[in-house]
Image 1 (cartoon, rainbow, N blue to C red):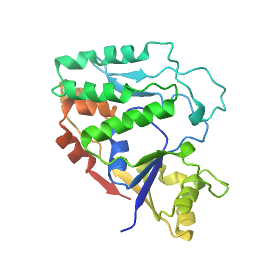
Image 2 (cartoon, one colour):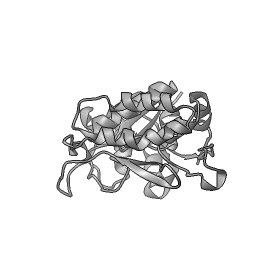
Image 3 (cartoon, rainbow, N blue to C red):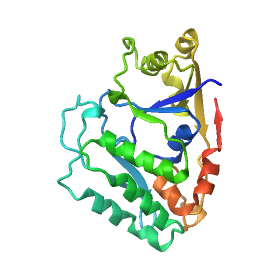
Length: 239
């Protein structure tokens, strides 16, 4: 059977589709040798507000130059950011049936002494996967000491990594379809597939009309058992 690999930037407690990609591939690589872009998902994600709408939970970062690579982005641990995050999640306790389990996962993920946003996110991803009993065969690209061919276009990073590792099947989220030149992959005998995850509805205890879709996996864990979440993770199609 052909082994499947996925390569993604390291996100902070990402949405459920990210974990669907982890679950259904054999190898997952956190890609960190490119420029950090502000206002993305590397240092923040979305949770419910106490009443209506959503809010960000975030990790404060040390000021850095615009060209700084993801692998070199540092956390500002002079701020009590963990306490702030737990305070923002406190309101879930009143209405979330799996609050205790979800908070324990968050605590485990954040229980790492580091100033690296990449290593923090690795820890949080691992904690979620362990809770959901998903195999987490994951490596951080900058720590792999992998030699790849020169990259001449953005979509060649994944191509050259696959070639270097000998993987013949590469999976990417559906949102990247237009980013990739599929013919390049075919010429290298690599099959590229795009995962379309069907974002689920679930009760957030605030009415169907106020449902907030695509929030952090933490929100999903607050309202669903790990068995239910695994069913959600399996709700995808390949394009």
